[in-house]
Structures are given as C-alpha cells and as structure tokens.
Length: 125
Image (cartoon, rainbow, N blue to C red; front, side, top):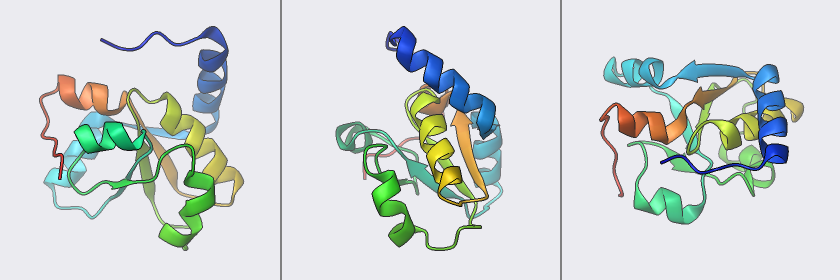
C-alpha cells in the first residue's frame, strides 16, 4: 500500500514533476534487459535500500544527494536515473540536481512500488 502523503508534500512533488524529465519503470527495465549501462541512484532512506533495491543501483538518499553527488558523479552530463518509493522524492531530488547543473537527470515515475507491482527482480545485496 502506498503511503498517505500530506497535501504540502504532494504540492511540491507535483510541481517538481512538471520541471523534470521522467521515465517509466518499463523503460528502465527494458534498458537493463538490453544490457545498457545505466546509472541508477536510489534516493530512499538507507533502511529502505537495505531492505531491497534494483540490482546495480547505488544509494544516495534524498537527504544528502546535493552534498554527495559531485563526488559520486563529477560529470554533469552523465545520464542519471533516480528512483524512490513512488516517484515523488526522486522528482524533488532530480529538480535540485538540475539546479546544480546536471543536464541529464531523469526521475523514474512510480518508483520501486511499480517495479515491485510488475514483479521485477530486487536484491538486498
């Protein structure tokens, strides 16, 4: 079950979604199945990432991504696909990375919730 979000959070998340490029779970899975090298960043909390995540994803939580992204991804033109639980935190994070100069940031709409609903594989390692 998806969490109930406050109206204020939903307002800023929906506003961010208007300003960022989004991709679907199906598109990301298709690209991975084709063997494409994709930089996937899970912006959920550390405990959520430890429970499960998409194989090959790295973890940089929404709370520290602006602080840590330049060390992890120094090239501002690198394609970065962000995901979270449902697509809101990733959109907010994407918006900030764009403001920092990253030019190829994409938020995965639906997040890991839709990934799970599709029965796509997850790992906890």
